[in-house]
Structure formats: structure tokens, C-alpha cells
Amino acid sequence: EADIYQTPRYLVIGTGKKITLECSQTMGHDKMYWYQQDPGMELHLIHYSYGVNSTEKGDLSSESTVSRIRTEHFPLTLESARPSHTSQYLCASSHRENQPQHFGDGTRLSIL
Amino acid sequence: GEDVEQSLFLSVREGDSSVINCTYTDSSSTYLYWYKQEPGAGLQLLTYIFSNMDMKQDQRLTVLLNKKDKHLSLRIADTQTGDSAIYFCAECSYNTDKLIFGTGTRLQVFP
Image (cartoon, rainbow over the protein chains, first blue to last red):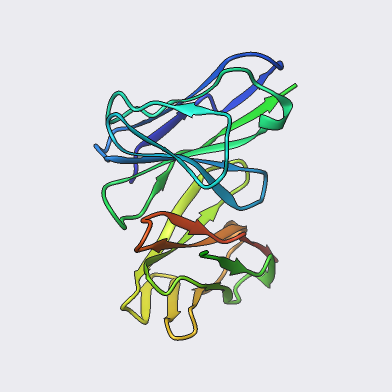
């Protein structure tokens, strides 16, 4: 069973606040990913990392930023939240190329 | 670019079999995956198949792959109400090593 954790599960916050969504995995996976998903809709890759100090932008443009200082930790930050950022954010990790991605439970973000 | 398509809805009676279909365009796909998402939750990996296989069975789940037609299906035998969820098909591109997800199929199981 995959061990990947996201906090918080739910966040309701006002416009203009700085937000950090946490994602940690205990499997030693090199690859980590952030997806954005509107309810019941498809997933869009917004960031990924192939290892420490490696970060890349995904297929969907996002105003968020990520960092990868430690293998197990891949936080996502929004410097100034806006209502258009309201969505569910899913973190995933995988061991190496072409291996299955394992997902966290997600953070449901609502910006008022 | 790569594209993955699924039908949006499927409704089945409890105890019947469900078949969820998926088509993809990337002929270099290495692995194809099925994920399940329950309301408010993340994605749970159900099963996956390597592109050189035709079929994979895992308890109530059977995956069929027709590589020539780029068609993937997931059959759930003896469907239960707990199987109600959204099912996502995803392909892993050999070229980009990224997962491309379909739009998801919402499975509703009624008694």
C-alpha cells in the first residue's frame, strides 16, 4: 500500500493569502507530481519533479510554485490566492520511469 | 498530441458485470492504468497492464487491451454498490514518461 500524505484535506481561505499545500511520501520515490482536478473532471498535470532540486512545469499552466529540497517532500505554494485557484490538488509519486503513480487523498481548496 | 477518451457515464444493476471502455492515441504507450476515485478522495490504483499483454485478470477485474485498435477495457464482475465511483483510464507515454488521463467514467450501481 502506498504511503503518500497530503495536508490539509480541506482549506477555505480568503483572497490574497499565501498558501502552502503539503505532500510527503515515505516510499523513497524519486518522482513526484502535482495535479489539479475540478470536481468529477479529468486531471491536469501542473508540476513534477524527478528528484531533489529538480522541478518542471506540467501541461497546464499554473500560478503555483513547487520545491523539492528533500526526496520525501514536495510542497506546492500559491503566493496570493485567488478564487480561480479553487480546485482539488492531488499529489502523486512513483518509483521510476513507467511505474504506477500512487496518489494522496488530495487537498480541496476554496478561495473566497 | 496524446489523447485518451472514455464514455462519461455507465449505469448497471448490482450483481451484473460492468465494462468500462477507453481509447487512446499514443502508439508508444508502455503501460496503461485504471484508477478509481470515490467522492472527495484521491485516485486509487486498481490495476495496470503492460502494452505487450492482451489481458490481465485480478480477482473481479479483467483488463483487455487491443493494441491494434488502441482500445482498453475494464470489466468488473459481480458489480457491487461499493464499486460506484469514477474510473479513470491513463496511458504512460514512452516518449514523455507522463500519465495522460481520460475524462473518467462515472459508474453508478443500482440495486
